[in-house]
Each structure stands twice: as structure tokens, then as C-alpha cells.
Length: 372
Image (cartoon, rainbow, N blue to C red; front, side, top):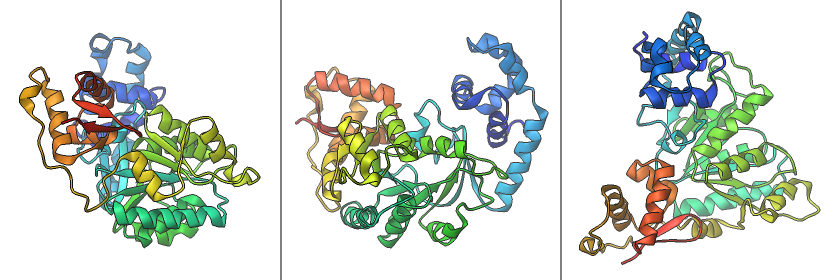
């Protein structure tokens, strides 16, 4: 069992004092969770900075017993257990320093499709916010029918985003603040079930985990990290959606906010995000598509290839980026990360070099254009 990457990844999350960042660093350093445990005693020599306390925390038979119990639930209920090593793990999220080392999923979708957004907001949504969700996703589906819509299944903007996505045949995923042995809030159970055919339910939490307040904050980093862009529809001047927006900015993702009247409490957070330049103002799907540089469905992608012999000094990775832009046209940096399978911190450096060489041009919203 100690060679099973899934069980080792789950067990690693149960070792006290290691945390999200520490666990991911151990896996990145050793190549897998199984290797972390296999070479536990040698870690201080193999990975500078690993303390004896970490080694002691990894000596945890109870963690493996709990992990094995969790895998029994996963297999019995036909769930997916995704580790950092799985191709189907959300690649955008994998690049985040505090990415979960294991995720549990029930449903049917591709987390690594070309376009992923999250829509978040207040639990006390107004008719204005609800209507924006409906109109925005209706219009977005017409231009970008393959977009994945992520939210949190909560009251208010979250549930209306999921339902609007379903109504427009868009794949939609709810990131939960508890295990997959329950649905919270229970009144959203039908919507959750409807999502399983085209989307689903995703969580980092084990079964028997209560939807405690701090879990929602932890959940928000997954929502922001797995998306190209965060859209805050309505928010008070404090709340979880503002935390998600801050996380998105910290992950170098695009962030947008829907403006409202200054007298409306439910729009104060959005107006503050726009005022403080943390989010761009959008009023429609058309605004969003233009800002992201997304080609509408059916728009032809330029077929011409770039003259490779004009750029003899391009590295292999630079050639890869040029090839992707040649085939697909203008792309957002996050889409390039997914397509090229290059970490975002290295991708930004490569794009800067290509810009300096006059090969690409940075456009509004983190989109890159190939110069002919």
C-alpha cells in the first residue's frame, strides 16, 4: 500500500505540521508522495531545509490506515482520486505553490480544457446579480461553448452560476468545503446531481469533514487556482468572494468584477475591486471575451505559419510556444501553460524573451499575439 501514490498522497495530508505548501514541496522535491515516505529518513540530506520534526511527522501509521479507509470509500462510490502526478489533475492548479496534493472528484469533465472561469459572489444575491449570471453565461456559451464554469455550490451567486451554466449546456464544477459523503447546503442536492453528467463535484477534503468556516477559505484557493479568470458578480465589502479575487491576483490570473450602484451593499466589494485596480470592469460576455482575447466559436484561426528560419536563436521551449500560437492563434498565458506543459513561472520568462526578440506581442488581459 505504501507504493500506491493515491494512498501516500492522502496520508501526507494527514501528517501534522506539514501543510499544503510543505506537502507539495516534498512531492516536487522527491518526485512522488510514495518516494517521500520511502526515503523518509534520508529527507534532510536529500532536501535541504527538511527538519527532524518533518521526518517524525511522516512516521505515522495511523495516517495510512485512514488513507486506506478513504480509498475504500473512493472505490466503492466510483470516485476519482487525483494526485499531483495524474494527467487529469487540474494543470493550472498544479502550478500554485499551495495546490492540494490530492483531490477527490465525482462527475465527468476535463479540468484542462482550453478555457476555465470561476464565478463567485455574495450569498445574498439580488435580482441584478442573478440576471447577470443568466445573461453572461447565455452569451458566453454562444461564443465559447467549451468553457468550464467553476463555483462553490453556495447560496446566492454560486448556485445561480451553476444553474445558468447547466441551462446553457456548459460544463460546471462545484468545489466543496467538505468531503464527498455529503452535499452542503442540502437544498442544492438536485443541482449537484444534475452537474454530474457535464461537470461534477470536486474537493480536497476527506469524508466525515464538516463544512467548517475555515474550510471555505481553503476551498477558495482551488476555485481561483484552477481557473483562467475569476469573475466577481456581487459582493459586500467583506466576504469569501473578495478572498477568491485576492487569491486569483496572487496566482497571476485575470480578475473581473461587475459594477453596481454605490448605494448597493451587494456591489460595494465589486466597486472596491475595480477602484483598487484588482479587477477589470465588465458589463457583458462580450467585454470579457475581448479582454481575454478569446476567439469566438467559428472564428477562423490564422492558418499561416511563422517563418521559422527568421528566428534561428529560438530555444526548444520557445519553438514550442511559437508552434502553439501558429496553430491556435492568440492565446492567454494560462492556456499556453496548459498547451505547452510548461510551469507558469518559466512560461512568463519565455514569453518575455520572445517579446524582446520581436516574436510575440503582449496584449490586454495576458493574451499573446504571434508577430508575422
